[in-house]
Image (cartoon, rainbow, N blue to C red; front, side, top):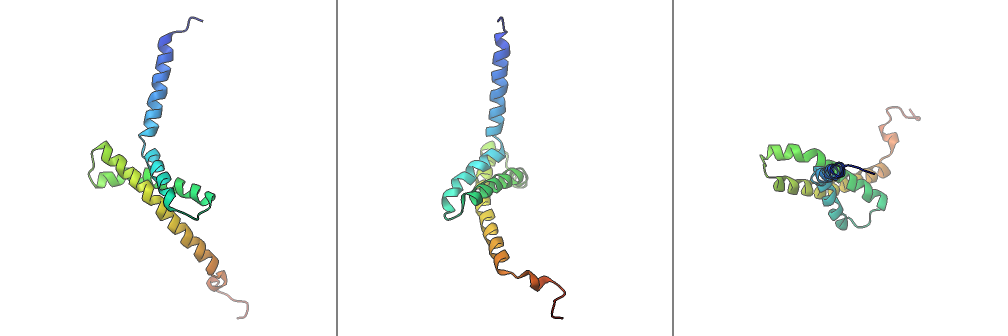
Length: 120
């Protein structure tokens, strides 16, 4: 039972560094923004809400680095705020696109796009 206490503290330090890295990632900050934005999306099913939150997180994680580079942002706080905003508005964008796609699928007849018709 003579374990090295330094190994335990090294393990805790590594776990803490890993959790800190996750919390500071653009994906996690975008996830928080998307979760906050759920309040403004009434009427959606929970399945659609989960999909929208996931897409808001992905939009924030994928677009924050490039957009912050394009806008020449150097501050970690400003980049984090951008990730939050992208998650917030990315969720709403995906929700609108999903609703439009469902509406279009329900109203468009696929027979209009088939080049041959049975009556011809």
